[in-house]
Image (cartoon, rainbow, N blue to C red; front, side, top):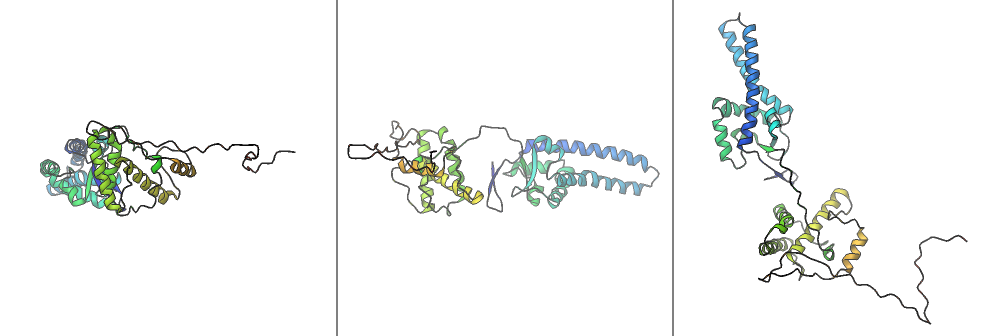
Length: 320
């Protein structure tokens, strides 16, 4: 996975295409291009048989440039980076910021491809792709492009665990402006995979991420709160703020369907955390959290000198 940052400071996770898939896509494109070149060359050879050698040589050079150089540039420009071979292999050429390429990007890639691919039979392109961390050839470096995989194996989407109810809304006043995107990404990856980690490793990672988050926010973590619960609650607060900025209303993605008043009531009535079971080393087996049952008010009593509580007003008047 390659982390690309757009101009709007949005981190994109893209999968760069490696040499085998790019070589297969290039092979398909070259077979199609050379087949078209040979067919057109044979047709022009029959049509220009009466011309002199200089005219036939000029036509041959123009045909080579148009079919083997100009045609790939035009195809990549019109399809925004998806040639026939790339479409068959599920690849696409994008800019360094993840956007679609334009004519100038395709022109630079095509011009460098004459040296990298046509004149050296792809040797320079293969060496450059093997050396590059993201599998880019020299044409990609000069053009500022990257070949990525559009089709990836479908996997089970990992979801973050919901924060404890007794921590919902507790960090509404926390300043999160100094927290970098890299730390948010690390916290999200930990929360989605903490169930797959060893208990001691999970606790250590949660404590380290919580310390980094406290150092960035400048506010200490609540005493007695497990690190994983603290991370989940702060992440929920960040997502809620992002949703308010995007949609203008509070939004939560933790699966709850209740209203804001119900959440506030549950937060106010929830008790302290109940730590999870400990292993032999005294470390919680998993960063789990539960909430104590809410306090239930005792029912009003009626006596000889007291009146029963009247039902709440609903605004409905029964018929006479």
